[in-house]
Length: 190
Image 1: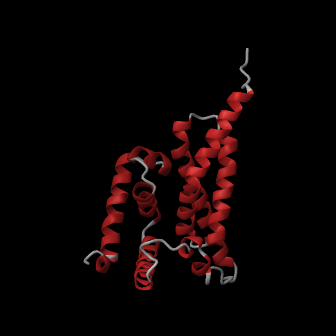
Image 2: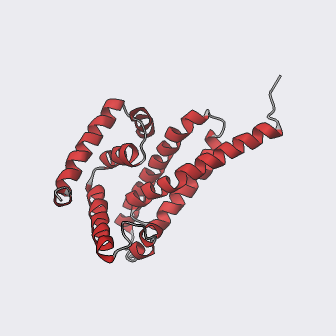
Image 3: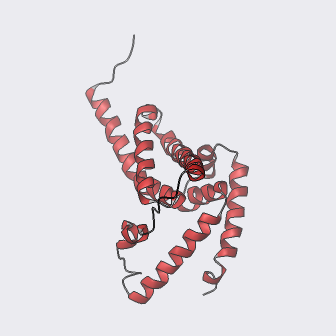
């Protein structure tokens, strides 16, 4: 005898999935943008992963969704980098991304800290320094840092997302923190 979900169960699953996707969408976009450096590429990555995630994992227990989702994002980002590495070898650069900092919605929304011009300039400069420092990290260190520090994933969730041991997550994060402190030294001594 097979079980067929009732309308109430399907609605509940759809509501939970919609709530989950809404809760991770912005974080996933920021991760993808940070890793790719391109706003449009980040949107494409997140959209692709969300569609694939709903098709493949909607019936998994909801406790597993977060690590599975972030693993899928990381895998898609790796695919993106592999594709663009090959493309750069064979094609002429397109010049994309030169003005993306000016059209980034995250840079356009003022808040209390950056409303004052001097504070905003300092915050923008710090933001650029952080972006540069993160870009200089090896992929695995950047992944560990973003998942643990920015996304607040547990060590176990991060290990599952990165497909490595918890000890490796701790090692990658430790190395990332040392490298970031060295690169951002002038900002840490105020």
